[in-house]
Amino acid sequence: MKFFSHRLGIYIGIFGIGTSLGFWGNYHAQRSTPVQQAKVSTAASPLPSSTSINSDRNVNFIATAVQKVSPAVVRIDASRHISTALPGNLNNPLRRFFDNQEGQNSQNQPDRIERGTGSGFIIASDGRLITNAHVVNGAERVQVTLKDGTSYQGKVLGTDSFTDLAAIKIEAKDLPIVNFGNAENLTPGEWAIAIGNPLGLDNTVTVGIISALDRSSSQVGVPDKRVRFIQTDAAINPGNSGGPLLNSQGEVIGINTAIRADAEGLGFAIPIETAQRIANQLFTKGQADHPYLGVQMINLNQETKAEINSTQEFDFKIAQSEGVLVVKVIPGSPAAKSGFQPGDVISQIGNLGVTTSLQVQEQVDASEIGAELQVKIIRDGQAKTLKVKPGTFPQAQKDG
Image (cartoon, rainbow, N blue to C red):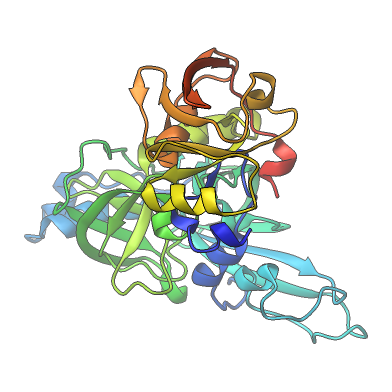
């Protein structure tokens, strides 16, 4: 609708929009050559102790943190066959991540292999690791290479498009692992260290600070995601996707994920608490469940109120200039079953008053699937309380 075209930042659909591989791939894809095969062993060396790190020379805290973590940071090379029947349009989202091609783009040529490279890190010594979903989406072959050159075939156990997270398993034992930190207590200005494989340059370290917290998906430019991003000025380049963001103690506080096309010196990371929660579901059952109501909303203010009341696109008028306006209810959704109607203004969810659609979405995300959630609305000037049980976001819609 024309009305929404300039309000992308405040327009959020709890029912979902599908994946945005085009965005992620466009900024994280890279050209790469086939990975050199390394001799495969069944185990890698354990992480070095702090004593061995500092025994020979005096190193700073950044070097110490990197030496502790880097053995658990991996390179991920993903590849897939692309039929030449797929258009050779450079805007095709499949081309944006799988950027390296073999063969000609012609209907008369055989299928080509397209490749992309990202990063990841090991969270369990039995070979469980996590990365970004866009690094491995659609991949037929995933190769995981450790810092020492040891290479393994990886199996993708699950991906989640809402948070851009993926769970991978390799068959190995006694692998080095990372230590988790706490992203919830971060303060802007703290040190931030990124490790990954940007632009094909393996084991690259960049450093900066935490420059902001709680950046919304809309602010970052990916409104279909459900993540409150960490913002950092540590350099994050193509190939860093899925690698760890560390604090000064060498603990993982986030997963490097997104860079904006119009940003200079800014990168974004998924908080580690979000990553752990989703990864646990992916490793356990192969998918992550997200609560949803099934409404589309916009934030109300004097300007949006006037514009809504003057347009012919809606069959309702509103008197409120504050709150969250429901503009559409998805048929058959939990919201529809609970009596939500277009024109309702949401003022409170549970015990929390809400004035933005982002606050509504966060409260829905924090709710339990199937558990009753009380939502206060204003309809035709009258206050009402609706009882809704959030459902599981439909997998078909989630996957686009």
